[in-house]
Length: 344
Image 1 (tube, rainbow, N blue to C red):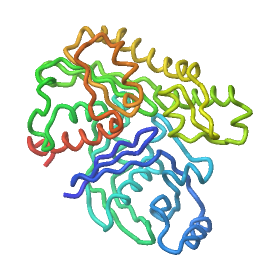
Image 2 (image 1 turned 30 degrees about the horizontal axis):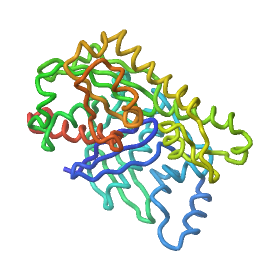
Image 3 (image 1 turned 180 degrees about the horizontal axis):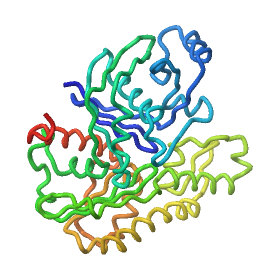
């Protein structure tokens, strides 16, 4: 069966097909008019980029081009689960992954604290999507949708083999594990017992993520260097992420010190992680292991790990691939569910 694991995060839309292909693009989407769309089509000698689509009769720019096109629609929290929002982002991800029309299933991630919106998320993706992309008309029928919570995807990526049926990491087998997932707009916690069962009764979501910290840093940096940045309406995201980690911003041919701004921005999120880990979960000493997942942990793991009071801390993927850990683990979880008959 064709299918897609989808993590429509606040910062990056991540996807992985059931056959293993991976794609990621920025969480940015702007509806455009039919004349604007036709003008764009005429401006390209060949097919336009994947970012420009007609979906069920309406025109959109999605991803990198949406960030450059103008003010993009960017919903956060429960507001993003409507068909005209997360449904459009899901349809765009499907069309980028499949070159021909097909029926498919979707396994979609959400923060643990958004479990009440899982039915809305599924309903928003289910059904027929008529999509024009790369000057071709395709029809995708999403006939089945199910969901999983984001940190459990990171957990499964660390625990399971590719077929989802065996343990891949002996160091985590039989351990009581705390999973911390820092995403674009939320930070999430789940825990497992020694048998690997997730206790959803103590899962938790905080509405603060790496995007908030990057935004805070960018504002503070521009305020300090207002003359140097006065013509920069938007700082390059990759340079902002680099500067948050290094304390040096490379721009305009210079290297500008920003350690104070980087420290202040990072500490807001690091303090949140430590406070909630200690107050809700009793600290790292209560666990046999801690697992870090999500793109925010990829950026901040070197600062967080020394503070978690645990010597057995693991990453769910390589640091620069942690934003993909949840969809990779989601595919392993899907395969596990298929193997044990949870999904027919």
